[in-house]
Length: 388
Image (cartoon, rainbow, N blue to C red):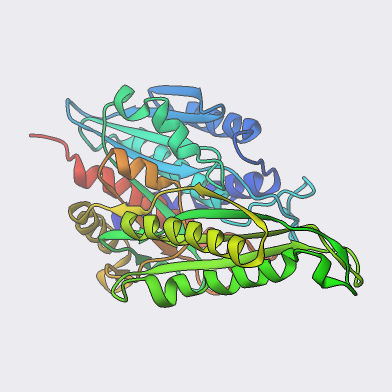
């Protein structure tokens, strides 16, 4: 396709950018070197405006097209994960305990590739807003950038994002209308009993037994309280207590994660957790305190924008390489906050076989960078064609 061939000329440069970013990962909002690298490339490309320091290290860059028109937003995340790398690559992370294990280095590179093309050709009307966002991995940088007013300040009318996905055929796009990724919450339950000698349990109020009862009861929320036509994951992922085999401890901790697509289901889980905690407290004569932490909301694609985005993906990769009705994912994504503010679409882009994301052996596949950049560029040209 024409756009792929044009952007394919940048493939070697894009590989270099991506591997530099991979070698120098940064966490959360502290993406200072990454943002400086991005801004330097954008200046080289000749974009019209570069607005830095949004949400600490976020950037919004503006490219003006030919004549008046709306503004389309394209987003890439920049942050890495707090984990060690075990790839053995020559461009592996130089920062111990930090790794681009989710491909955000590649997402940033794809948007830079699109920026270079769009700044050179300007074959569109209106404007494009390039959103480079920190702190997707748990920091909610998307929400912080929205709260900073980027949608209103730059008059963004719709917004799009891509995420690489291993084990989907290289160059295949996948998306769906409606919820595509789940809301993610977590819970923390602290239990206080009365500790004592393991040989004399009658003199204690055992938090271990209470913790086990809590974990078992929590598993019934999905099996006995959920409308079977809806989706929900509730996982107990932590139980901490005890220090020796002959001591009944005084305290215990139970924690876990909740993944939902429906706010009514989310409320049901909170109510059931509260009731279970109260019941266990009464049954085992312990004190139980629940803290329910609401996290990223569900990522909900606009149906009309998904149809358009799937069409553009088909133009780039071929219709046979587009899945427009994938099943929802139980993972979470803070692009959800941007989709709450503006209609748009979130798509996955397959990068072929290899270790999954959040794995110490993962690496982004540079072969998909021109494909993703072409999607972004064609999205702009399709949504905002030159008038007349």
